[in-house]
Length: 380
Figure (tube, rainbow, N blue to C red):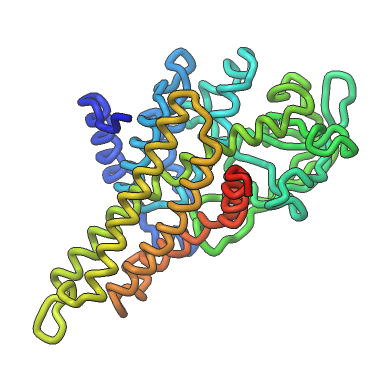
């Protein structure tokens, strides 16, 4: 495995960093407080093609392989402090664009991907329900077929990007008696009659809009079905492998400035006649932060390499998601502790970083679920 970047890749990553610093920056204290989505930042990402990283050039994308994608998203995370915007981009990429690219018909690709790739449209994922969270396949939303349409009824919760989305991947059952074998995926435009969206507030990632979605006799053409009828389990598991393996690429980027600012502070802050970095307990936290950063990056790159090779990565993706999310939370806590009282002030942004990081233990399957998946794949 060669994880070195080509000159073209390095230039691409440098351009992403420059873009993020020039156009994606925002007043995050107020944006976080108000739960405000940075649409101008999204549009800036769209102009350089980030919402279409894996999409073929013929459909308006950048046609990047998995390693280049996570490298680009890591650099974006390094330069962009808006974790909510980053999360929205990841939800768009891994739950809508990637499954559509892999399993959509040519007509669906032509209809949806050019707009999604340029960021003109935003995608969201509607899988979770009030009674179907970790037990994802216990969903109760139904899709009753009537000729050339499906009639959707049900309630989805924690729908990423719902308040700003133009299209959702909706998981519903065509026959509850079939269990997972009845689950079907539909591409549902949010302007359809019978679809209602209600924004929800969250502890963190507040700049990424999330909503409750209700379907009341919402009619969706059969032509909008993604994959075969009853193939929803396969679509979901494939999507989850990409999501778990790649969704925290930006978090690896985010951990680097947290480490760098903590290192600078430890070198500059003096107590009892010397820099606080000279004290063993502070130094140990910085060493642990560096170790978590490097191990997280290695797990991320190895999983992306497997995905790029078309090799199985189900176990590796679960490990990657679990490890990076725990590393991100602990890195935030260490950064706050090293900064002392200053780290507890809102102006430093460390409180927001911690609140954003905690969410990563929950989305894409809780870390407890990731542990269960890995254990089962180990034959336990």
